[in-house]
Image 1: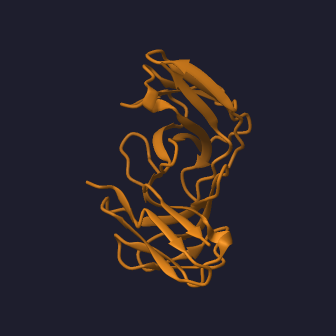
Image 2: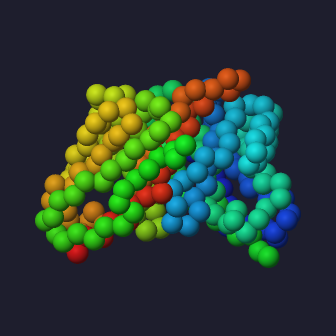
Length: 111
Length: 117
């Protein structure tokens, strides 16, 4: 699986959009970009994933650059409950069973 | 639809005691996983079951055994607990389905917090 680089921490005001960047410059053509988050003391939670097109669901939007070397997770209207560690994971659709979580970005939503 | 349910939520054991952590999913997923997470660290895979009737070792299987009882249930057993097994244990199941975009998503339970004294 390709390595990812994320800022260790970010802050965002409640109600504003939170934009979390991820660099994955060694991504291969058949690897997907996944985002998970872990709220304190809870199990990791899937947010969104994509291959090359931008994706949106009820939780977030995922913007992947045209060269696929980086992506941004967007939480459009952050709430205090979005405070968590966010993990960007690049992996093949098939094959490896385990999820490898890096250090992630600790996002703090401030009132 | 409860998703992935783990029991118990908390457990304290003495060194040498045994116990079984239970996990059940109601999403009809084929694959299930057991991870452990130590303080300030990422998840490490202990065992997984790609489908009913099969189990395989992950990266940290020593000291653990698993049973895939049926499609819904995947249990983790500590035969002789050690302080090094103090951790938070997460069970997960995997969804392969998808329409316009294939999935391969793991869904996690709330965790079992285990302390071994």
